[in-house]
Length: 73
Image (cartoon, rainbow, N blue to C red; front, side, top):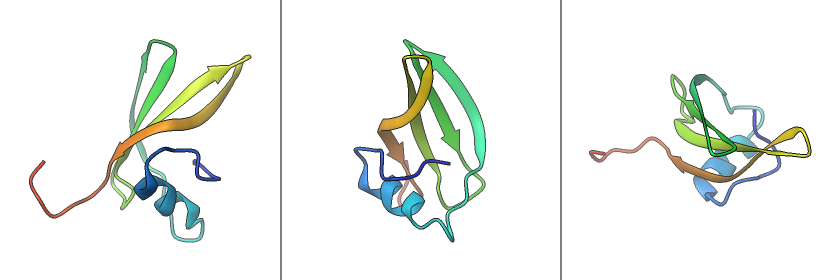
């Protein structure tokens, strides 16, 4: 689960910074151009998150988007 506010998307940072209540449920992963795109769902943290490889290690961020809402789309 992401920690330490690694994203340029405040909604995702706020959700994952609440470590006592945040849930992480990966529902799909795609690899494209050196990044992993991780889709979460079945929890309030319904985001698309990214990881990138640097010197053989994967780190979260900075790109993220999504989240639950009340409007279409």
